Amino acid sequence: MSDLDQIDLKLLELLQESGKLTTKEIAQQVNLSPTPVYERIKRLEREGVIKQYVAVVEAEKVGKGLIVFCDIALKEHTKEIGHQFVEEIMVSKYVCECYNISGDYDFRLKVMVRDMKHYQDFVLNELGSIKNIGSAQSTFVMGVIKHNYAVPI
Image (cartoon, rainbow, N blue to C red; front, top):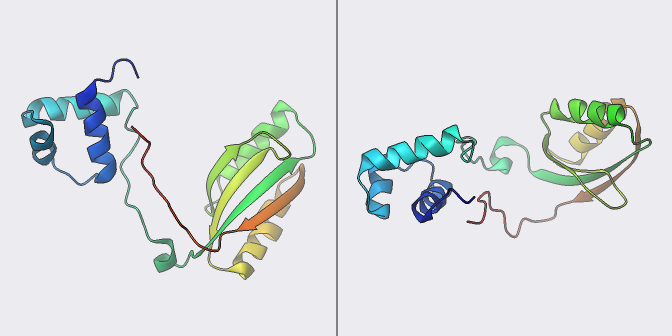
């Protein structure tokens, strides 16, 4: 973070608001010419500060209206079992986020599916096929109040 100056931080804020802004539009907002703005953005990409650009999709409009947070406790805690669990979760297209957490559970999954029946199928066929899951606790989202993809800058 120490090598990011105020202009870099402003560029990141602007790009998080809209990744479709042109270099010229960004340059106008940070009072620089397009060439240094372009070079700064490319440096931020090269250094991994900017990981990727994506389209934010409305889940319900593509048939994934049910969000479930699923907390997973493993039966055993070895390096191999942990890595195996992560490998299997990484290939699931319905697990949108996975966090290694502290407390009573080891992992928290954010799962997006069509409906309750689809989630039941996910639990039985995907989670059920992963070895060493000791327990799972599901929390169903009734409504999204705030959802922001931006990292606070």
